[in-house]
Amino acid sequence: PILVHAEDDMLDVVINLVRKLGSKVHVCHISTASDLKQIIKAKKQGLPISCGVTPHHLFLTEKDVKRLGPFGKMKPPLQSKKDQDFLWKNLKFIDVVESDHAPHTVEEKESDSPSFGVPGLETTLPLLLTAVSEKRLTIDDIIRLCHTNPARIFNIKPDEQTYVEVDLNSSFIINNSSLFTKCGWSPFNGRKVKGKVLRVFVRGKKVFENGKILAKAGSGKILKSVVS
Image 1: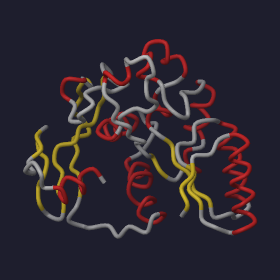
Image 2: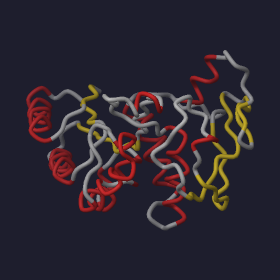
Image 3: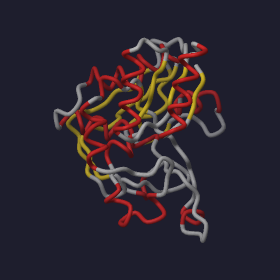
Image 4: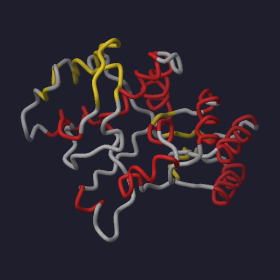
């Protein structure tokens, strides 16, 4: 599929092109009720369109921007609680949860011209598992949004020896000092989550366990697979 970042009127343009040309399109990081309504309508019309949402649009709103400052600056911006509620209510029409990872450093974010974007890769699963503990999601929803649908939409052949083991009952607080991302910060710093990654296996090889990366530095193929 063609991946696009399209909002508001531009989303109208994309949907009309899909209707005209029949090309498969995936709309990245949907954030508003109005945009998702357009996609739902297109899906019901049988158009070959899929969409994704980020954890920050599911778990943060425009009310968090003042607290986060430049660390809450992203595209699309954080939206209203009403928009967020609509995303949750219509999650069945969303195909993928995508981290939209943008690893800008603290210095870049605190500069006079802060970059857009937030890191989100390693906090995505704990946040979703927390939603499971709150009965907002099921494990099957996570599998659909983070595994089955991405594999189908992007034609990725899953490897049965590549998998993640989690502890659904383990709680912890997301802390900037313990993150693996080199940018060293998260918009979810200080948030308590329930659900922790215990082990990660890539092609049958254990590469992560109990908070430690076991893969050797520079083993690019393994690390790339973990990130993927």
